Amino acid sequence: MTVKQYKLKMEVLSTAEPWELFRCKFGNIVDSEIEPYAQVIIKQCHGLPLIISAVGSALKMESKIMEWKLAVSHSTQDTLPVHT
Image (tube, rainbow, N blue to C red):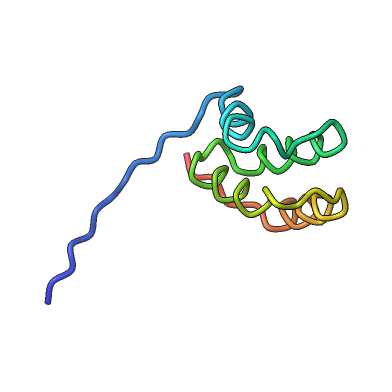
């Protein structure tokens, strides 16, 4: 059996678009106390919409600030390599 390989070019969002996407999909979960942590996490997604959506989905049920702080701590330790 032959497996075909495809390269898929993923475009990144512009400077303001990642936050707009997050707010559009998950805006009701971000209050003024959580927003700074959400901003850091979104920045670590490097403008990739799929990652922003996945992270937002994972955190959308978390209203405790401690969970967001933990997510920030993990996101800054495990950053994705960026290939340009």
